[in-house]
Amino acid sequence: MRRRDFIQALAATAAGWPFPAGAQTQPAPSRTAPTQPAALTQAQSDALEAYDKALNQFKSILNERRTQISAHQALPNLPGQALYLARVGVISTYKDLTDALPSKIGRPNKFGIPPAYFDADIEPLVDEYGKLFDLMEAPPANAQKSETPFEDVVDLGIAIARAKGLDAKNAEVAGRISLGLFFAETNGKQNVGNARSNTYKGSLQTGPSEDRIGQRKWAAIKPSIKSPGLIARDDKEEARAGKLDHRFNHWTAVRDGLANAHADLFLQIPAIARTLPDPIDQMKLFELIQIIPSPTKAALASGRFVDYRISQPRIMGYLRNNSIFAFGHADRARTSATFGEILAAMWLFKRKFERALAEFNRIRAAQ
Image (cartoon, rainbow, N blue to C red; front, side, top):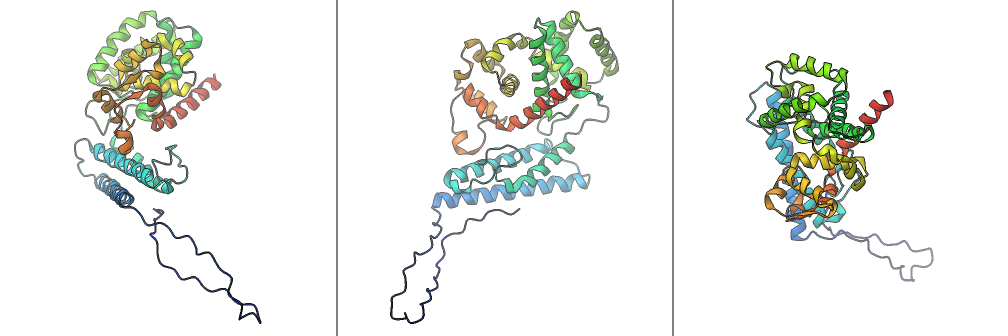
C-alpha cells in the first residue's frame, strides 16, 4: 500500500539568485521562503499513530485468516468477528485522523465510503476482507440453491404484498425492497452462513425462532396467494427441503424471512413511498426493520418518521453493531439520532442497495 506519509517540517537552504552581468554590486532580488509543512500537534501525532497501529492489526488478521484457510487449519469460533472489528478499527481511526488532520482526506474510493472515513489506498485490503468472508460464510454442502435467486426474492415479495392487499403498483415496490434486503443481508449470495454469529444463517440471515414464526405466518398467507405458478413452486421447494433447516433452502429462507418480519409492514408501503420517494431510502427503512424493529415501527406510526428521535443506549448500540454511527470518536459519542440522520449514516448499505436496484431493473426489463 502506498500511504501518503505526513512529513514534519525540515530545515532547508534556498539557493541564491544569479546576478546579471555587470550588476554584481546590486542587491540580489528578495525571494519568499518556501512554505514549510507545519509540525504535527500531539493530538495529530496520536491520531496518526493510532491509525498506523489499526492498519497493521488489520493486515495481520487478514494474513492470519488467509494462512489458516490456505493450510486447511481449524478456524476459531466466529472467525469473522476479529476481522470485522479490525476493519472497524481502521475506518474509525482514519475518521479520527481526518478529524484531527483534514488534509489527510483523500480521493474517492470504489466502495462509496465517504473519503473522510477511508483511505482509497487500502482498497486491496478490503477486497481481501470480502474474499475471506466469502470463504468463511460459504453455504453448507447440503444447501439447496436456486437457479433464479434474484427473481425468487422479487416474486415472493410481490406475492406476499398482493396477498396482504396491496395493488400491483405498490406490490412492485415490495418486490424491489425485498431484493434490497437480500443484498443488504448477504450481498446477494444465497444460503450463506455467518462468520460473526452462530445464530443467523441463510439468504435473509434469520435465526431459528424467526424462521419458525415465518413458516407459521406463511401458512396463514398462502391461501391468499393468487398465483398458481408460485404455489406450485412453493410446494416443490417445501417437499425438496423436507427436514433440512429451511434457512438453507433459498426459496423457503426468503419466504419465511419476508413473512416473519416484513409482510405486515408491506401494507404501509404507499405511505412510506410518500414519505421516502427514493427507492434506496425505502430499502434502508426496511433494513432498519431488521436491525431495530420496534423503534422503526414507532417512528412510522408517529407520522414524522424523518424527525423521530431515538436515544436509548441499547438501540444506539444495535445501530453501531450494524455499521451505523460506528466509526470514530465523534460518531460513537452520539447519544441520540433522528431517523433522517440514521438514513444518512447508512452509507455502507448504499452500494448494496444500488446493486439490488440495478438487478431489479434488469429483471423487469427482461419481462
